[in-house]
Image (cartoon, rainbow, N blue to C red):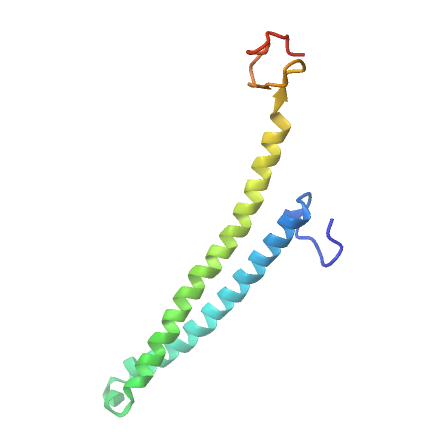
Length: 131
């Protein structure tokens, strides 16, 4: 197992490359979500000052609204990316669990080494009885 850092409870029993990918995906997800929150707060604050003070909107430069919209666009994009990386970390875990389940259930014929189906009592190629 990996000796550096604490292993997440959901990563116990997974191979090292999978754990590294999941750590990277979780780390990128938290970075993206943090950026999304900060830029959303900044964007809504800038946009809110121009919307809620409609009387003074003539005094404010148009660049203020452009900057606010830019913050909100960055916030939306990083929110989607952050959620994508969180989903990716879970999919890697689920894929590994499915692979492990399939490997455990695979049976082969002792004579011809053909993969047997779950309910087979005899090999479909050579007729050998399945033990």
